[in-house]
Image 1 (spheres, helix red, strand yellow):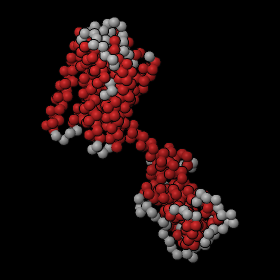
Image 2 (cartoon, helix red, strand yellow):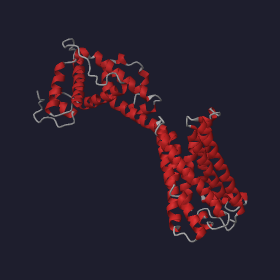
Image 3 (cartoon, one colour):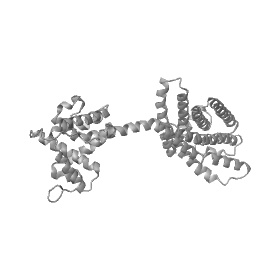
Image 4 (tube, rainbow, N blue to C red):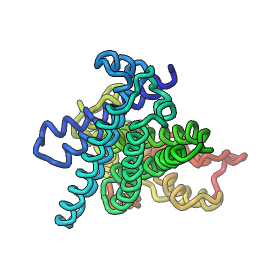
Length: 416
């Protein structure tokens, strides 16, 4: 029982979190029919995980005074969830006449099925104790309950087929990445769910005319398929919500890593040219605190701009011979063109800073920093990170091998 409580509890937590996330949007846009369907689908999907939990199941029965009434609530909620999501997918169609027709067919079938399920449940006798785990097996041959189970399993199967087809269809055309992934995940869950409904139907029908040999499959494979389906549905329903948050977290970590890797180069250049810093108070004294900044992307973009501005100011001190030496080093050691250019740029900066420190200026031709990104901020950031890594490792001309991530020449010489 503990396992069921834990599994259902985890699924309920995931599903209800998604519901409350979407309700925030619904409160701001109550007239949005699609949002209402989404919230209804998620709420009715999450309800069974709460009610079916053995700890809650028995208390619902006692509260309402009807044995196994929780099963009826669970099955009706599943029906509402499937139909709500199917209706949502149908509403995405651009053919409005077909939308109206399919909406009416889906809703009508669901209403008739749920009404039949309620009627059959109360006509049957399920008062022989509470069966929150084995209800389907225990009452499979009970008059009216057999039909109750058949009605539910048929709607479930039809719903799974519809969800699988429509989710795959719309996943191919939506432009939101996490919505597309969520639809594909729900489609996979619907396919997994077909290992539950059809097996239950075949077993129920077979037991009406004899003894089904599929009892073991019915008791083991079907529940496993339903569990896999439930997990995939929970992930798919919630994916558009947590997926965006995951992307934001990843981007924040990526920007923080960029900030930390650019910091040594930025720090060296802005010490030489503090006037290039537009907003001095923007930067924390401790680089580790940058992660707390609300707009970390802006902080990184300012680093990139200020590094480039400082490089332009450093041009009178740049010695072209340093670049030629670095390129010769890269060619001699079989380095890639980008790796060589990064080392050359780092060497130029280091050499120019030293020349500036010693007051040697105006003796070289004006050069323009290497710019493979062609003005793209993301590409510029990534390129300067490579330069910053080489700059951090580079110390002097004999340190080019260290900047390249290789052992320095034994004689300390740099290839000409």
